[in-house]
Length: 139
Image 1 (tube, rainbow, N blue to C red):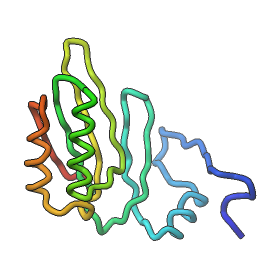
Image 2: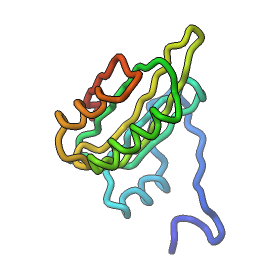
Image 3: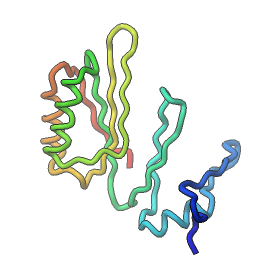
């Protein structure tokens, strides 16, 4: 029997944040069938939401943060080309521009999805209009 009922695309449950967060059984059941045994949690403060991504605990997740002058179409084209060149699949990404002109773009990727961390970082640093790149492992 399927965990999801017929004609049901999602599962939703409310969790009390004043108690230890325990993933409900239907969620664990679906994730265990996919072979993923960990979750990447991303808090997007711009949208006031938390996103969860099933990942394998044996993989490392990388967060890249970029600071630039503007989120121009050329920036996004250059970034897409770098992601494609390095065979990177983004788990999640978000960008925002603040008053005063500074813009920020962040993405989460699976370490095993790219060829070389150093090459990836060098490629990111070569994006026009970019003035800060940081990379950290979050898992």
